[in-house]
Image 1 (cartoon, helix red, strand yellow):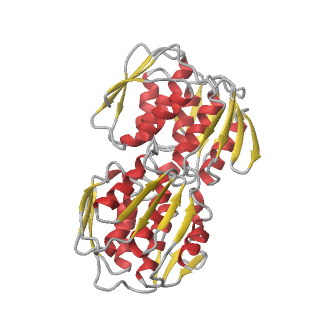
Image 2: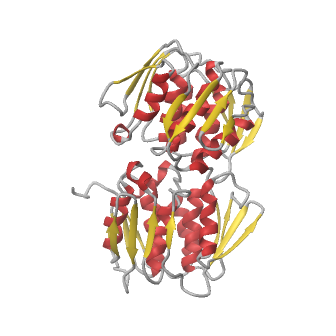
Image 3: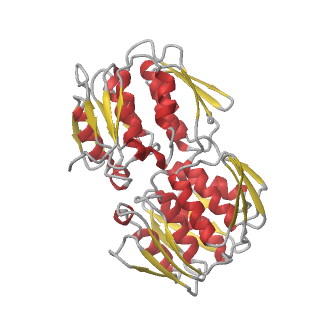
Length: 434
C-alpha cells in the first residue's frame, strides 16, 4: 500500500516534557449521555461534551430522529428529550466508525417502532454486532442484515415486543452490546431481565452505563455481573444539567509522558481517582510500577520514577484502551513486559494486537503476539525515524507519539485519525515538549 496520499507528521526527538493539559470530554460518557438525554423526559444541558467525529455522528443521528439540539456554548448542548418516543419513524443513519453511537442506537431504534437503516464506514461493517442483534431478536425485534450476516449495515422495522423471557447475551464479546441493551430496555415499558452468559469483559464500561442511567432516573437491579433487571415503571427523566468527565483513556498518554520524561511532572485536568471511568485505573497501574502519581480534585499528575521501570506482566482486561499505552511504556522498561487478556483488541478500530506488534518492531522492539496477549522486549536503542502506520485508529497515533520522548524522531502516518476522540491531540502534545 503506498502512503503518498497520506498526510504525515514528523515528531522531533525530545527527552523532557512538562506542563498541564485539559482533557477533552470522555467519548464513552459523551455518547451515552447524548442518547439518554434524547430519550428522557425534559431538557438536559450537557457541559464539557467531547467535540469529535464519534460525537458528531451521534448528534447528526439524533437530529435526523427529530431531537431538538442546541449548541448554546462551547462544548455545551441543550437536548430536548423525546420522552422515549422518537418523532421520526423513517430514517437512514450514517454512523462512521462510532461503535459508541452504532451499538446503542441499534438497540434503541429496534424498540422504537419505526423503519431505520444504520450503516457506517467499511471498517464499521467489519465490526461484529451479531450478539446484540441476537439478543434483540429474542424479544421479537425485526432486524435484518443488509450485507454480511452478523455485521452492519442493518435494517430495522417496527416490531411487537415480548419481554416475558430472560434475554441471554454473551459477556465475552463486547461490553457495548450489554450497554446498548441496558440503555434501550426502559423504552419497552415492560419488566426486562438480561442474563449474561459466561464471563463479562470490560466491566468498568458497564459501571459507566449504570451510573449514567441512574443519573437519568433509572435504577437497574442487578445480581453481580450475571443478571440485570429493569422494571416496567422505569423512565428516563432529565437531571437538568450534567457535566461530562474528561476522557480517562486520553489521560493515559499524558500520564505516560510524565512517567517517561518528566521530572517536574505533567498535570492532567478533567479526571481524578473518583472518576466513574475504568481507565482511571491506568494511573494506579503506573503507581504500582513505581511512577510518581499524585491525585487532586479534578486532576492527576505523573512524574518520572526514581528508578527505571522494570518489565511487568499485567492482566489488562479492566483497562483495554489504556493498556495500549502500556505497550509503549514497555519500550522504556527494563526487561520484557507481557500484557494479557486483551482479546477485545482484535475487534476494535483495527486489530490492535497485530497493529501494535508490527509498529513496535519498527522502533526496534522484539514482539510476540498471541490470540489474547502481547509480549514486548525493548531494544537497547530505539530505532530513529521509524514511519508508523496508524490503521485509521486514533489510539495507534496517540500511542506512538510517545516514542519521540525516547530521544528519537518518529513519523506518524495519517495523524488526523486522532479526530475520533481528540482532534487537537498533537497540538497539546507539542506544548508539553517544547
